Image (cartoon, rainbow, N blue to C red; front, side, top):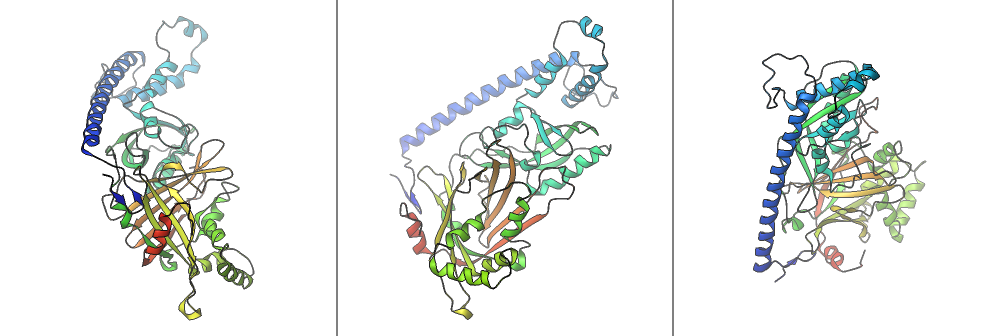
Length: 452
């Protein structure tokens, strides 16, 4: 029989269904294993064909320890391919006519990028705009909201902590300096099971870089993400609370992030701005907001900081009948006890899906998508929200949230791409827990078509 979840019935899972699901999963694993074997064999054959077609660069015997017939590694093959491609314009038309029939270098490049096993990315430096990615790399983004990798800024595909090493590498290359391997935390999207975000540690190996703005990198995953077929039901009750911005542990407010975004896009809906719009529909709250506005010379940062002191946010994690997670975000006005301790009714700001569906923050020229990071075994929950240009599908901004028993920490870095002169400032807003969940509000949220 179906169980009853905190925010609705959970999907039934009888013995027959479980056995059927197990058989389907077993068949899929066997099929995936067979496909992987075929892909590896085809890739090996292609590399064996490419190897004698690409002239070898000078290397010591100690370096030639690869598995190809020439003893080169795949990285050596890529380096020699790029070198030979660059030398091609110097070839005369006669020599081109005399060239024996076979695989062209253009086709050779396409074959290398068609590898399903290797994750390779070609970028423009120092912007880190993607020119193309191998089939193996594109597989990470089949279920992402990105229409294609071409044109995306690679910096939006890594965690905030990895931005500085990428920017430093791009600048070093443009100055003609040698760069070696480094590590990043790569954002990838699940290829099967629940739709979610996987963050994996990758070793990034420069295969070819040039001060002319060229960069080809091989990504070696240090781990592969676990496939998740369902979210634990107990997640729902762990991250429900009332929070408020803590000025002592925050270096920004919503206004700061909004102003930084105006340099990238003319209009973008941000959570706090939407919350104040909803709050203004409450007569008593609107009166208080107007009095605050009247006491200030301009409606800017000072107003937003003050409003953060007078409002509380209620966060609750919900799960639908298909095991998809979502966040209910509500707000209310609450004045200090010294001035009466007034509390307005809760107002629902939005219900944000965390399964890759378009969220209620979308609008105008922007589409917004929310994801849960597939790392739910600890005491924290990690959420990511991506902002894309509607017309192109290019990501221009992302938000990261960490929910724990202490509250909600938002971390944001705003940038155009890696060519920005200044390092992107790190904004963080810490919303500390001030009360347990409001059970009467939760009961109201469970009622259909109710946005109290």
